Length: 282
Image 1 (spheres, rainbow, N blue to C red):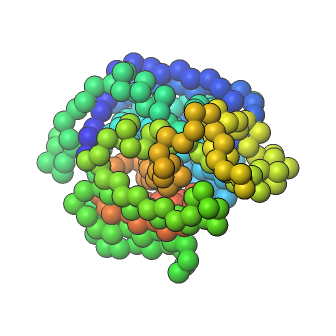
Image 2 (image 1 turned 90 degrees about the horizontal axis):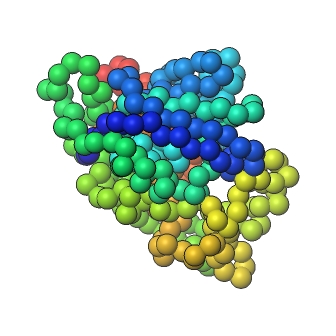
């Protein structure tokens, strides 16, 4: 498991994937655990309420203000081992993270350029460090068809399985561990939607900032996206990208083997709530 420290601030602006409006994101070095500022309030990720019912992961402040679709930005930070920093989002409420490139590749490249590696953190590290949470017993959310399980492990690993009726996706399974190259294996995998979903999403005020430049569209004629697929199994790799960002809401690295089957943000975040409770009682 790698750890990095931001040395410079990062500034990004762009359209929100769902709202289609422009937002600005800044990520600044900090001595504190990852936090989020919006509307003049700043709290650690671990203290924010979570909601994953709207095709993305929302972080909600005590006054009800929320920042939508946080998963790609958080995935880039957690995937590269950055666990300290201050994220700030500005724009018209309700706020949303910029969609960026529909994945976390470009942001992850900039994080690598503006951070340095630091020594791995262990229980023996000096006080004040953000210690990984070592899960001691299995946790399960979901049902027999769609679920996420976290199992005790001495390292971090994800096994994800998806299943779609579309012949262009079907069943895909991918196994990712903290010893693999996040930039190479996960960060490039873009968000996707089925053509049959898009009209309903837009009617509900979602996916208004989506395009073939930042997403993959799947319909009866095939897969449509700028430049074509980056991996034959790009769909399941993107689900892992999302899961890594959602797990970052724990506020610290996780030592566990997470197994997800036909899951999504709602189940990811249910698991995070269970992990938060377990870490508080640890």
